[in-house]
Amino acid sequence: MEHKELIEVVTGVADTLRAPINLDEALDRITGSAVETIPGISYASLSVTTKGGQIRTVAPTDPLALRADELQYEFQQGPCFEAVVGAPIVQSDDLANDRRWPRYGPEAAAALGLTAQLAFRCRAEPHARGALNLYFVEAHELTVETQQLGAMLAHLSAVALGWSRLDQSLHEALTTRELIGQAVGILMERYTIDADRAFSFLVRTSQSTNVKVREVAAGLIAEQVPPGGRDRPAGARSGRGDESSWLRRGTARA
Image (cartoon, rainbow, N blue to C red; front, side, top):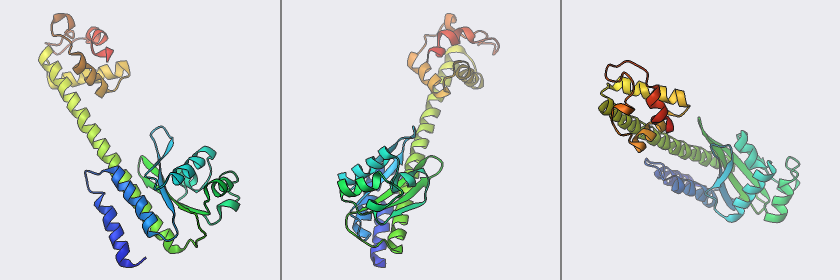
């Protein structure tokens, strides 16, 4: 690939990584760029781990790439699987006869017509990890340039995944802060207590019920417990006392 073409590819991918990021668009651009620019590649895909530890495929350029990925998940072997679980780069020049993967290699060659494969680990600490998968259906020399371009696109994939997780985490943090703020406000107004005591009450409720503070706050807001002496935390006006009776009947149900 000429230097000018490489710059155009990187610039095009980088444009999709500007916040707020459209993750699907960014990953589609990356796998599409791999097929368009790296010599010999027929198909590409990305494997990404879920929070539950499962592996799923995103942005496949062809159904055949998806099927190849799924075979590796099923057999728990192959370049894609090894890259996901930790190998920086995994290369097979002859899948049909690669003894490292006695089930996947022959199946990929016979059923899918694949001749060779490259997989690059994608990791955006601390949570996002996966692999960029490159598939060949014709005999082709896997050169240093092929590896370098693949590694570059894998790095951009990791950036996209990292941005997405960061954006999601920030959104969740802002939502949590808003929920807790509303719950604190409800407690302050309803029971004539200050903000510190209201927040402490939410924390104690969370600890006593083994429910996250965010969920306690959301439950309180949703239930909108009617004000009145019957549901008032004991000692709320004076800033002293035990809130356990209100906790059992009110927020604890969240």
